[in-house]
Length: 413
Image (spheres, rainbow, N blue to C red):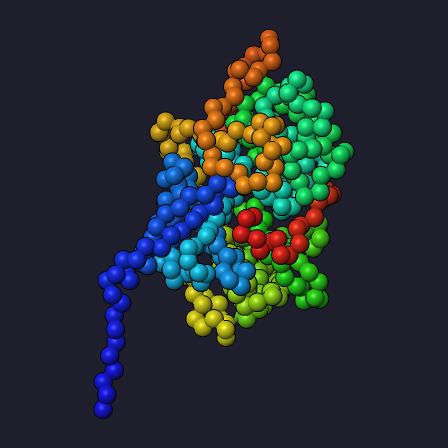
């Protein structure tokens, strides 16, 4: 009778380093080496240390598997166990939980990273805007990256070279230029970015990471999770908003996703169908994490949840981070000297020459403060977060469209 021999991995294979490349929000990249037992939290900490970022709970690392399915890297599991792609690994650093009140973000660095994410959302058509709001957001971006309008430096069609929206009409460009010239003059980059966050956070699709699916009639819908609750869009119209307090359970079975809640004192069950079981499980996990982050008062209240599923046996999941209320409280206690914000300079010449080229790694770019103020105009002071008025925008008619489904699964979003 032959005895079975079990070979343990050699020490060399256990110590083998694996290269990971992480694409940042400005499209620059950083790399690091990990070992087979390195957990996801290490990579997130590595990026946050690169930025000197303290308010890191809003961010995560996203990757795409060989089947083009997106995932968020789980911090408490080894990276190797989660990645199914061939080495070296490529991932992206992105905003995972959008702050419900951006004005409560303590540090300019964190606001700048959120600004970069929203700029991506606008360009890829995920942040839907009425015309007036689109023009204002576009003007804030131009002011933040070019500074004040200068007729000697900026030609008559300078806005055309900014690729801000998936559909950018001459009419929209003229309105952006008008606001940039007349309303935002004298604002430093930090203030222009702050104004952009103020206006963007009140839009219906702020923070929506759209998951394409079919409803019970077979019509295409996009599901998402926000600080307010679970949302459903069809075309440009939001057809469902179920607040987190009214959501009692999220579950999935195979390719079918269920949202169970209460609406008008009656039980409500919404059913949707995804393209694959993996997409359905990803949707479920995103919902579980968002509900825990925005709904719970303390992380100690978070429970492990399960969903009966014949394809993913024993699917159990628990969000392991801090919740929104704890993050805001921790931010209010930050006492350190604010870190320098490294912005990449984008003169019009660079923009023309590198519009379609990869953006180089970010370099230190001093904030444009009093040097760019109009003559005889008093310097503008960045208000404290606690006194900043919030601009409210009501999206009565949406003019942009979500990008096609294949782009929705793009790792670059």
